[in-house]
Length: 218
Length: 313
Image (tube, rainbow over all chains, first blue to last red; front, top):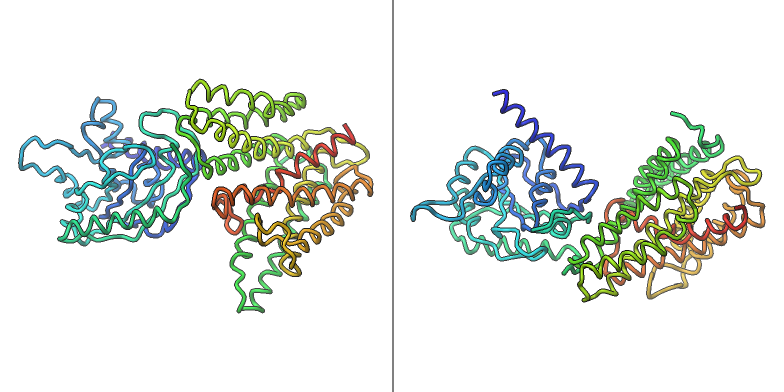
Protein backbone atom coordinates (compact mmCIF):
# COMPACT_ATOMS: atom_id res chain seq x y z
CA UNK A 1 0.00 0.00 0.00
CA UNK A 2 2.76 2.38 1.04
CA UNK A 3 4.95 1.36 -1.91
CA UNK A 4 1.99 1.82 -4.22
CA UNK A 5 1.54 5.39 -3.00
CA UNK A 6 5.23 6.19 -3.52
CA UNK A 7 5.14 4.83 -7.05
CA UNK A 8 2.05 6.87 -7.87
CA UNK A 9 3.73 9.94 -6.46
CA UNK A 10 6.87 9.26 -8.49
CA UNK A 11 4.79 8.88 -11.62
CA UNK A 12 2.95 12.10 -10.90
CA UNK A 13 6.19 14.02 -10.30
CA UNK A 14 7.76 12.50 -13.39
CA UNK A 15 4.95 13.60 -15.71
CA UNK A 16 3.92 16.85 -14.07
CA UNK A 17 7.43 18.20 -13.44
CA UNK A 18 10.25 16.46 -15.36
CA UNK A 19 8.34 15.79 -18.55
CA UNK A 20 6.54 19.13 -18.46
CA UNK A 21 9.81 21.04 -18.12
CA UNK A 22 11.41 19.18 -21.00
CA UNK A 23 8.34 19.43 -23.21
CA UNK A 24 7.60 23.09 -22.55
CA UNK A 25 11.11 24.55 -22.26
CA UNK A 26 13.43 22.37 -24.31
CA UNK A 27 10.87 21.58 -26.99
CA UNK A 28 7.92 23.95 -27.01
CA UNK A 29 4.55 22.93 -28.39
CA UNK A 30 2.25 24.43 -30.94
CA UNK A 31 -1.11 22.86 -30.09
CA UNK A 32 -4.22 23.31 -32.23
CA UNK A 33 -7.75 22.38 -31.08
CA UNK A 34 -6.61 21.29 -27.64
CA UNK A 35 -10.24 21.41 -26.47
CA UNK A 36 -10.95 18.32 -28.58
CA UNK A 37 -8.83 16.11 -26.30
CA UNK A 38 -10.87 13.85 -23.99
CA UNK A 39 -11.60 15.18 -20.51
CA UNK A 40 -12.68 11.89 -18.97
CA UNK A 41 -12.28 8.14 -19.37
CA UNK A 42 -12.93 5.81 -21.00
CA UNK A 43 -11.40 7.27 -24.14
CA UNK A 44 -8.88 6.43 -26.82
CA UNK A 45 -6.28 8.84 -28.18
CA UNK A 46 -4.75 7.79 -31.48
CA UNK A 47 -1.52 9.32 -32.77
CA UNK A 48 1.22 8.79 -35.30
CA UNK A 49 4.40 7.48 -33.73
CA UNK A 50 7.93 8.73 -34.38
CA UNK A 51 9.54 9.10 -30.98
CA UNK A 52 9.45 8.06 -27.35
CA UNK A 53 8.48 11.67 -26.74
CA UNK A 54 5.09 11.15 -28.39
CA UNK A 55 3.62 9.56 -25.28
CA UNK A 56 5.21 12.18 -23.04
CA UNK A 57 3.75 15.07 -25.01
CA UNK A 58 0.26 13.56 -25.18
CA UNK A 59 0.22 12.92 -21.45
CA UNK A 60 1.26 16.48 -20.60
CA UNK A 61 -1.61 17.77 -22.74
CA UNK A 62 -4.29 15.60 -21.15
CA UNK A 63 -5.90 16.91 -17.91
CA UNK A 64 -3.73 16.40 -14.80
CA UNK A 65 -6.57 14.76 -12.91
CA UNK A 66 -6.76 12.07 -15.55
CA UNK A 67 -3.12 11.00 -15.14
CA UNK A 68 -3.81 7.92 -13.02
CA UNK A 69 -6.15 6.66 -15.75
CA UNK A 70 -3.87 7.18 -18.73
CA UNK A 71 -2.17 4.13 -20.22
CA UNK A 72 -0.07 4.22 -23.38
CA UNK A 73 -0.50 0.93 -25.21
CA UNK A 74 3.01 -0.42 -25.90
CA UNK A 75 4.75 -3.53 -27.15
CA UNK A 76 5.41 -6.01 -24.35
CA UNK A 77 8.42 -7.60 -26.07
CA UNK A 78 10.18 -4.21 -26.28
CA UNK A 79 9.23 -2.56 -23.00
CA UNK A 80 9.33 -5.64 -20.78
CA UNK A 81 12.65 -6.89 -22.19
CA UNK A 82 14.65 -6.44 -18.97
CA UNK A 83 13.41 -6.23 -15.35
CA UNK A 84 14.62 -2.63 -14.97
CA UNK A 85 12.96 -1.52 -18.17
CA UNK A 86 9.79 -3.37 -17.23
CA UNK A 87 9.61 -1.72 -13.80
CA UNK A 88 10.02 1.71 -15.33
CA UNK A 89 7.56 1.04 -18.14
CA UNK A 90 4.86 -0.42 -15.93
CA UNK A 91 5.14 1.88 -12.92
CA UNK A 92 6.41 5.26 -14.06
CA UNK A 93 5.49 5.45 -17.73
CA UNK A 94 2.43 3.39 -16.90
CA UNK A 95 2.13 1.42 -20.12
CA UNK A 96 -0.45 -1.17 -20.96
CA UNK A 97 1.74 -3.97 -22.38
CA UNK A 98 0.46 -5.67 -25.50
CA UNK A 99 1.91 -8.84 -27.01
CA UNK A 100 2.69 -8.64 -30.71
CA UNK A 101 2.71 -12.41 -31.38
CA UNK A 102 -0.09 -14.84 -30.55
CA UNK A 103 0.87 -17.78 -28.33
CA UNK A 104 -2.37 -19.64 -29.01
CA UNK A 105 -4.18 -19.46 -32.36
CA UNK A 106 -7.43 -18.09 -30.86
CA UNK A 107 -5.78 -15.58 -28.54
CA UNK A 108 -7.12 -12.01 -28.84
CA UNK A 109 -4.08 -9.75 -28.49
CA UNK A 110 -6.31 -6.75 -27.75
CA UNK A 111 -7.90 -8.38 -24.66
CA UNK A 112 -5.94 -6.18 -22.18
CA UNK A 113 -7.31 -3.10 -23.96
CA UNK A 114 -10.91 -4.30 -23.56
CA UNK A 115 -10.39 -4.72 -19.83
CA UNK A 116 -8.75 -1.31 -19.49
CA UNK A 117 -11.52 0.49 -21.38
CA UNK A 118 -14.18 -1.31 -19.36
CA UNK A 119 -12.40 0.01 -16.25
CA UNK A 120 -12.65 3.57 -17.62
CA UNK A 121 -9.03 4.04 -18.60
CA UNK A 122 -7.74 6.47 -21.25
CA UNK A 123 -5.65 4.56 -23.78
CA UNK A 124 -2.99 6.12 -25.98
CA UNK A 125 -2.77 4.06 -29.13
CA UNK A 126 -0.21 4.18 -31.91
CA UNK A 127 -1.71 2.29 -34.85
CA UNK A 128 1.51 2.45 -36.86
CA UNK A 129 2.76 -0.30 -34.57
CA UNK A 130 6.29 1.00 -34.14
CA UNK A 131 8.08 4.33 -34.33
CA UNK A 132 9.24 3.68 -37.87
CA UNK A 133 11.08 6.13 -40.08
CA UNK A 134 11.15 9.58 -38.49
CA UNK A 135 8.57 12.08 -39.68
CA UNK A 136 6.91 9.67 -42.07
CA UNK A 137 3.36 8.50 -41.68
CA UNK A 138 3.25 4.71 -42.00
CA UNK A 139 0.09 2.73 -42.78
CA UNK A 140 -2.19 2.21 -39.78
CA UNK A 141 -2.84 -1.31 -38.60
CA UNK A 142 -6.41 -2.46 -38.13
CA UNK A 143 -6.36 -3.20 -34.38
CA UNK A 144 -7.76 0.22 -33.55
CA UNK A 145 -10.81 -0.40 -35.77
CA UNK A 146 -11.50 -3.65 -33.98
CA UNK A 147 -11.19 -1.94 -30.62
CA UNK A 148 -13.44 0.95 -31.66
CA UNK A 149 -16.03 -1.42 -33.12
CA UNK A 150 -16.26 -3.25 -29.82
CA UNK A 151 -16.81 0.02 -27.91
CA UNK A 152 -18.78 2.21 -30.34
CA UNK A 153 -19.67 4.71 -27.56
CA UNK A 154 -16.05 5.48 -26.65
CA UNK A 155 -14.52 8.51 -28.45
CA UNK A 156 -11.41 7.90 -30.54
CA UNK A 157 -9.50 11.20 -30.83
CA UNK A 158 -6.93 11.39 -33.64
CA UNK A 159 -3.82 13.48 -32.97
CA UNK A 160 -1.16 14.38 -35.50
CA UNK A 161 2.31 14.92 -34.05
CA UNK A 162 5.09 16.61 -35.95
CA UNK A 163 8.66 17.44 -34.97
CA UNK A 164 9.13 14.94 -32.15
CA UNK A 165 10.79 12.54 -34.55
CA UNK A 166 13.28 15.30 -35.30
CA UNK A 167 13.90 16.04 -31.61
CA UNK A 168 14.41 12.42 -30.59
CA UNK A 169 14.15 9.86 -33.39
CA UNK A 170 14.36 6.12 -33.00
CA UNK A 171 17.83 4.94 -32.08
CA UNK A 172 19.08 8.36 -30.87
CA UNK A 173 19.87 9.30 -27.29
CA UNK A 174 20.50 13.05 -27.67
CA UNK A 175 17.50 15.33 -27.51
CA UNK A 176 17.76 18.29 -29.91
CA UNK A 177 15.34 21.19 -29.28
CA UNK A 178 12.65 21.79 -31.90
CA UNK A 179 9.21 23.34 -31.69
CA UNK A 180 6.70 20.53 -32.20
CA UNK A 181 3.20 20.60 -33.64
CA UNK A 182 0.26 18.84 -32.06
CA UNK A 183 -2.94 18.97 -34.11
CA UNK A 184 -6.01 17.40 -32.52
CA UNK A 185 -8.86 16.15 -34.70
CA UNK A 186 -12.58 15.66 -33.95
CA UNK A 187 -13.39 12.46 -32.06
CA UNK A 188 -14.43 9.48 -34.20
CA UNK A 189 -16.66 6.60 -33.14
CA UNK A 190 -16.25 2.95 -34.07
CA UNK A 191 -18.69 1.03 -36.24
CA UNK A 192 -19.29 -2.46 -37.56
CA UNK A 193 -17.64 -1.51 -40.85
CA UNK A 194 -14.01 -1.50 -39.79
CA UNK A 195 -12.65 -0.60 -43.18
CA UNK A 196 -14.85 2.49 -43.22
CA UNK A 197 -13.56 3.43 -39.75
CA UNK A 198 -9.94 3.09 -40.88
CA UNK A 199 -10.75 5.22 -43.86
CA UNK A 200 -12.28 7.94 -41.68
CA UNK A 201 -9.31 7.81 -39.30
CA UNK A 202 -6.75 8.03 -42.07
CA UNK A 203 -8.51 10.89 -43.82
CA UNK A 204 -8.76 12.75 -40.52
CA UNK A 205 -5.00 12.34 -40.00
CA UNK A 206 -4.18 13.47 -43.50
CA UNK A 207 -6.48 16.49 -43.14
CA UNK A 208 -4.65 17.40 -39.93
CA UNK A 209 -1.30 17.09 -41.65
CA UNK A 210 -2.53 19.58 -44.26
CA UNK A 211 -3.01 22.19 -41.50
CA UNK A 212 0.71 22.52 -40.92
CA UNK A 213 3.66 23.66 -42.94
CA UNK A 214 6.25 20.99 -42.26
CA UNK A 215 9.78 21.74 -43.52
CA UNK A 216 11.66 18.90 -45.16
CA UNK A 217 13.84 16.73 -42.95
CA UNK A 218 15.89 13.97 -44.42
CA UNK B 1 14.53 43.34 -4.46
CA UNK B 2 17.73 45.28 -4.94
CA UNK B 3 17.71 47.65 -7.84
CA UNK B 4 21.09 49.23 -7.21
CA UNK B 5 22.41 48.10 -10.57
CA UNK B 6 20.00 50.32 -12.47
CA UNK B 7 19.51 54.01 -11.90
CA UNK B 8 16.23 55.59 -10.76
CA UNK B 9 15.88 57.16 -14.21
CA UNK B 10 15.79 53.71 -15.83
CA UNK B 11 13.32 52.47 -13.23
CA UNK B 12 11.03 55.43 -13.89
CA UNK B 13 11.32 54.83 -17.62
CA UNK B 14 10.35 51.19 -17.14
CA UNK B 15 7.35 52.47 -15.19
CA UNK B 16 6.61 54.71 -18.17
CA UNK B 17 6.25 51.61 -20.36
CA UNK B 18 3.34 50.51 -18.18
CA UNK B 19 1.86 53.97 -18.51
CA UNK B 20 1.95 53.61 -22.30
CA UNK B 21 0.34 50.18 -22.06
CA UNK B 22 -2.42 51.52 -19.85
CA UNK B 23 -3.12 54.30 -22.37
CA UNK B 24 -3.08 51.77 -25.25
CA UNK B 25 -5.45 49.47 -23.37
CA UNK B 26 -7.86 52.32 -22.56
CA UNK B 27 -7.86 53.51 -26.20
CA UNK B 28 -8.44 49.93 -27.36
CA UNK B 29 -11.36 49.42 -24.98
CA UNK B 30 -12.83 52.78 -25.99
CA UNK B 31 -12.56 52.00 -29.72
CA UNK B 32 -14.02 48.54 -29.21
CA UNK B 33 -17.00 50.03 -27.42
CA UNK B 34 -17.62 52.93 -29.79
CA UNK B 35 -17.07 51.00 -33.02
CA UNK B 36 -18.69 47.61 -32.48
CA UNK B 37 -18.69 46.95 -36.25
CA UNK B 38 -14.90 46.85 -36.50
CA UNK B 39 -12.96 43.75 -35.54
CA UNK B 40 -10.31 44.60 -32.94
CA UNK B 41 -9.53 41.00 -31.90
CA UNK B 42 -6.02 41.04 -33.37
CA UNK B 43 -5.15 44.38 -31.76
CA UNK B 44 -6.55 43.16 -28.43
CA UNK B 45 -4.38 40.04 -28.57
CA UNK B 46 -1.36 42.14 -29.44
CA UNK B 47 -1.86 44.49 -26.53
CA UNK B 48 -2.34 41.56 -24.18
CA UNK B 49 0.93 40.00 -25.41
CA UNK B 50 2.63 43.38 -24.96
CA UNK B 51 1.58 43.38 -21.31
CA UNK B 52 3.18 39.98 -20.79
CA UNK B 53 6.36 40.92 -22.67
CA UNK B 54 6.77 44.26 -20.86
CA UNK B 55 6.14 42.60 -17.49
CA UNK B 56 8.78 39.91 -18.08
CA UNK B 57 11.24 42.41 -19.54
CA UNK B 58 10.81 44.81 -16.61
CA UNK B 59 11.21 42.02 -14.09
CA UNK B 60 14.35 40.76 -15.83
CA UNK B 61 15.80 44.27 -15.94
CA UNK B 62 14.95 45.07 -12.33
CA UNK B 63 16.13 41.81 -10.72
CA UNK B 64 19.82 41.89 -11.60
CA UNK B 65 22.29 42.32 -14.43
CA UNK B 66 22.76 38.55 -14.78
CA UNK B 67 19.02 37.91 -14.89
CA UNK B 68 18.80 40.43 -17.75
CA UNK B 69 21.61 38.65 -19.61
CA UNK B 70 19.87 35.32 -19.03
CA UNK B 71 16.62 36.82 -20.32
CA UNK B 72 18.23 37.80 -23.63
CA UNK B 73 19.93 34.39 -23.87
CA UNK B 74 16.48 32.79 -23.55
CA UNK B 75 15.13 35.12 -26.24
CA UNK B 76 17.97 34.00 -28.54
CA UNK B 77 17.30 30.35 -27.70
CA UNK B 78 13.58 30.59 -28.42
CA UNK B 79 14.20 32.49 -31.65
CA UNK B 80 16.85 30.05 -32.88
CA UNK B 81 14.61 27.12 -31.98
CA UNK B 82 11.77 28.70 -33.94
CA UNK B 83 14.06 29.29 -36.89
CA UNK B 84 15.46 25.76 -36.91
CA UNK B 85 11.93 24.37 -36.63
CA UNK B 86 10.64 26.18 -39.72
CA UNK B 87 13.62 25.77 -42.07
CA UNK B 88 14.47 22.48 -43.77
CA UNK B 89 17.15 20.65 -41.76
CA UNK B 90 19.02 17.40 -42.34
CA UNK B 91 18.78 14.38 -40.10
CA UNK B 92 22.58 14.09 -40.29
CA UNK B 93 22.91 17.50 -38.63
CA UNK B 94 21.19 16.69 -35.34
CA UNK B 95 24.43 16.89 -33.37
CA UNK B 96 25.57 19.94 -35.30
CA UNK B 97 22.38 21.73 -34.29
CA UNK B 98 23.10 20.87 -30.68
CA UNK B 99 26.53 22.52 -31.02
CA UNK B 100 24.85 25.55 -32.55
CA UNK B 101 22.52 25.82 -29.53
CA UNK B 102 25.57 25.60 -27.27
CA UNK B 103 26.91 28.79 -28.84
CA UNK B 104 24.10 30.71 -27.07
CA UNK B 105 25.19 30.28 -23.42
CA UNK B 106 28.82 30.85 -24.43
CA UNK B 107 28.08 34.03 -26.36
CA UNK B 108 26.12 35.51 -23.43
CA UNK B 109 28.80 34.33 -21.03
CA UNK B 110 31.40 36.37 -22.92
CA UNK B 111 29.09 39.34 -22.51
CA UNK B 112 28.70 38.56 -18.80
CA UNK B 113 32.44 38.55 -18.16
CA UNK B 114 32.84 41.60 -20.45
CA UNK B 115 35.35 39.89 -22.73
CA UNK B 116 34.64 42.10 -25.72
CA UNK B 117 37.40 40.67 -27.92
CA UNK B 118 35.97 37.17 -27.85
CA UNK B 119 32.34 38.31 -27.80
CA UNK B 120 32.78 40.06 -31.13
CA UNK B 121 34.58 37.23 -32.98
CA UNK B 122 33.20 34.09 -31.36
CA UNK B 123 30.25 33.44 -33.69
CA UNK B 124 31.52 35.15 -36.88
CA UNK B 125 34.88 33.36 -36.70
CA UNK B 126 35.06 30.36 -34.38
CA UNK B 127 31.51 29.00 -34.62
CA UNK B 128 31.49 29.80 -38.33
CA UNK B 129 34.58 27.62 -38.83
CA UNK B 130 33.71 24.94 -36.29
CA UNK B 131 30.20 23.90 -37.39
CA UNK B 132 31.17 22.96 -40.99
CA UNK B 133 33.98 20.86 -39.47
CA UNK B 134 31.38 18.97 -37.43
CA UNK B 135 29.35 18.51 -40.59
CA UNK B 136 32.38 17.13 -42.42
CA UNK B 137 32.95 14.63 -39.62
CA UNK B 138 29.33 13.48 -39.96
CA UNK B 139 30.12 13.05 -43.65
CA UNK B 140 26.82 13.88 -45.38
CA UNK B 141 27.54 16.09 -48.41
CA UNK B 142 24.05 16.34 -49.89
CA UNK B 143 22.74 19.89 -49.23
CA UNK B 144 25.94 20.64 -47.31
CA UNK B 145 26.18 24.27 -48.36
CA UNK B 146 22.50 24.98 -47.86
CA UNK B 147 22.69 23.50 -44.40
CA UNK B 148 25.88 25.29 -43.31
CA UNK B 149 24.62 28.56 -44.78
CA UNK B 150 21.16 28.55 -43.23
CA UNK B 151 22.53 27.51 -39.84
CA UNK B 152 25.08 30.29 -39.79
CA UNK B 153 22.56 32.87 -40.95
CA UNK B 154 20.32 31.90 -38.02
CA UNK B 155 23.18 32.15 -35.53
CA UNK B 156 24.32 35.51 -36.85
CA UNK B 157 20.90 37.16 -36.76
CA UNK B 158 19.24 35.52 -33.77
CA UNK B 159 22.22 34.98 -31.47
CA UNK B 160 25.10 37.25 -32.52
CA UNK B 161 22.98 40.30 -33.37
CA UNK B 162 20.62 39.97 -30.43
CA UNK B 163 23.51 39.46 -27.99
CA UNK B 164 24.57 43.05 -28.74
CA UNK B 165 21.55 44.16 -26.70
CA UNK B 166 23.04 42.26 -23.79
CA UNK B 167 26.47 43.77 -24.33
CA UNK B 168 24.99 47.29 -24.12
CA UNK B 169 23.96 46.38 -20.60
CA UNK B 170 27.48 45.65 -19.40
CA UNK B 171 29.06 48.77 -20.90
CA UNK B 172 30.42 51.08 -18.23
CA UNK B 173 28.72 54.46 -17.85
CA UNK B 174 29.88 56.93 -20.47
CA UNK B 175 29.69 60.70 -20.51
CA UNK B 176 27.36 62.69 -18.30
CA UNK B 177 24.42 60.33 -18.28
CA UNK B 178 23.84 58.45 -15.07
CA UNK B 179 21.69 55.81 -16.78
CA UNK B 180 24.67 53.75 -18.05
CA UNK B 181 24.30 50.47 -19.95
CA UNK B 182 20.74 49.73 -18.78
CA UNK B 183 19.72 53.18 -20.05
CA UNK B 184 21.20 52.46 -23.48
CA UNK B 185 19.52 49.05 -23.58
CA UNK B 186 16.13 50.50 -22.73
CA UNK B 187 16.63 53.31 -25.27
CA UNK B 188 17.42 50.80 -28.05
CA UNK B 189 14.69 48.27 -27.23
CA UNK B 190 12.01 50.90 -26.66
CA UNK B 191 12.81 52.83 -29.85
CA UNK B 192 13.01 49.64 -31.94
CA UNK B 193 9.66 48.37 -30.72
CA UNK B 194 7.92 51.76 -30.83
CA UNK B 195 9.28 52.22 -34.35
CA UNK B 196 7.51 48.98 -35.36
CA UNK B 197 4.28 50.25 -33.83
CA UNK B 198 4.69 53.73 -35.36
CA UNK B 199 5.35 52.32 -38.84
CA UNK B 200 2.31 50.07 -38.47
CA UNK B 201 0.04 52.92 -37.35
CA UNK B 202 1.26 55.40 -39.98
CA UNK B 203 0.93 52.73 -42.66
CA UNK B 204 -2.59 51.82 -41.53
CA UNK B 205 -3.80 55.39 -41.45
CA UNK B 206 -2.22 57.07 -44.49
CA UNK B 207 -0.22 54.31 -46.23
CA UNK B 208 -0.70 54.19 -50.03
CA UNK B 209 2.53 53.67 -51.98
CA UNK B 210 3.99 50.21 -51.53
CA UNK B 211 7.68 50.18 -50.67
CA UNK B 212 8.71 46.50 -51.10
CA UNK B 213 5.65 44.90 -52.76
CA UNK B 214 7.31 41.57 -53.45
CA UNK B 215 8.50 41.01 -49.92
CA UNK B 216 5.99 42.71 -47.67
CA UNK B 217 2.90 43.96 -49.54
CA UNK B 218 1.52 45.80 -46.49
CA UNK B 219 4.58 48.00 -46.02
CA UNK B 220 4.27 51.52 -47.45
CA UNK B 221 6.48 54.55 -47.93
CA UNK B 222 4.13 56.54 -45.71
CA UNK B 223 4.46 53.98 -42.91
CA UNK B 224 8.22 53.87 -43.26
CA UNK B 225 8.72 57.65 -43.32
CA UNK B 226 6.14 58.23 -40.59
CA UNK B 227 8.03 55.73 -38.47
CA UNK B 228 11.36 57.40 -39.16
CA UNK B 229 9.91 60.80 -38.17
CA UNK B 230 8.20 59.57 -34.99
CA UNK B 231 11.17 57.50 -33.88
CA UNK B 232 13.65 60.30 -34.50
CA UNK B 233 11.58 62.72 -32.42
CA UNK B 234 11.36 60.14 -29.62
CA UNK B 235 15.09 59.43 -29.92
CA UNK B 236 15.89 63.11 -29.37
CA UNK B 237 13.37 63.50 -26.53
CA UNK B 238 14.57 60.42 -24.63
CA UNK B 239 18.28 60.86 -25.26
CA UNK B 240 18.84 63.23 -22.35
CA UNK B 241 17.14 60.82 -19.98
CA UNK B 242 18.75 57.53 -21.00
CA UNK B 243 21.90 58.23 -23.01
CA UNK B 244 24.98 60.44 -23.12
CA UNK B 245 24.09 61.46 -26.72
CA UNK B 246 23.99 65.12 -27.73
CA UNK B 247 20.95 66.27 -29.72
CA UNK B 248 22.53 65.97 -33.19
CA UNK B 249 23.86 62.51 -32.31
CA UNK B 250 20.50 61.46 -30.89
CA UNK B 251 18.93 62.63 -34.15
CA UNK B 252 21.35 60.35 -36.00
CA UNK B 253 20.61 57.46 -33.58
CA UNK B 254 16.90 57.89 -34.34
CA UNK B 255 17.53 57.67 -38.08
CA UNK B 256 19.74 54.59 -37.61
CA UNK B 257 17.25 52.75 -35.40
CA UNK B 258 14.18 53.53 -37.50
CA UNK B 259 15.81 52.70 -40.84
CA UNK B 260 17.59 49.59 -39.56
CA UNK B 261 14.41 48.46 -37.81
CA UNK B 262 12.53 48.63 -41.08
CA UNK B 263 15.25 46.67 -42.91
CA UNK B 264 15.33 44.00 -40.18
CA UNK B 265 11.57 43.64 -40.38
CA UNK B 266 11.47 43.15 -44.15
CA UNK B 267 14.52 40.86 -44.13
CA UNK B 268 12.83 38.43 -41.76
CA UNK B 269 9.65 38.82 -43.87
CA UNK B 270 11.65 37.73 -46.92
CA UNK B 271 12.91 34.67 -45.04
CA UNK B 272 9.39 33.73 -43.98
CA UNK B 273 8.13 34.25 -47.51
CA UNK B 274 10.91 31.98 -48.79
CA UNK B 275 9.98 29.26 -46.30
CA UNK B 276 6.27 29.74 -46.95
CA UNK B 277 5.04 30.66 -43.47
CA UNK B 278 3.20 33.76 -42.34
CA UNK B 279 4.36 33.75 -38.72
CA UNK B 280 7.48 32.16 -37.30
CA UNK B 281 5.55 30.63 -34.42
CA UNK B 282 2.59 31.06 -32.09
CA UNK B 283 4.26 31.96 -28.82
CA UNK B 284 2.97 35.54 -28.77
CA UNK B 285 -0.73 35.72 -29.66
CA UNK B 286 -1.41 38.57 -32.11
CA UNK B 287 2.27 38.91 -33.00
CA UNK B 288 3.23 35.38 -34.08
CA UNK B 289 6.49 33.96 -32.81
CA UNK B 290 9.53 35.38 -31.06
CA UNK B 291 11.26 35.89 -34.40
CA UNK B 292 8.36 38.06 -35.57
CA UNK B 293 8.82 40.29 -32.53
CA UNK B 294 12.61 40.65 -32.60
CA UNK B 295 13.01 40.90 -36.38
CA UNK B 296 13.80 44.63 -36.27
CA UNK B 297 16.13 44.17 -33.31
CA UNK B 298 18.37 41.85 -35.36
CA UNK B 299 19.38 44.93 -37.36
CA UNK B 300 19.05 47.75 -34.83
CA UNK B 301 21.01 46.05 -32.01
CA UNK B 302 24.41 45.65 -33.71
CA UNK B 303 24.15 48.95 -35.57
CA UNK B 304 23.17 51.02 -32.55
CA UNK B 305 25.75 49.18 -30.44
CA UNK B 306 28.61 50.02 -32.80
CA UNK B 307 27.40 53.60 -33.11
CA UNK B 308 27.66 53.97 -29.33
CA UNK B 309 30.85 51.93 -29.11
CA UNK B 310 32.57 54.06 -31.73
CA UNK B 311 31.56 57.28 -30.00
CA UNK B 312 32.35 56.48 -26.37
CA UNK B 313 34.54 53.39 -25.92
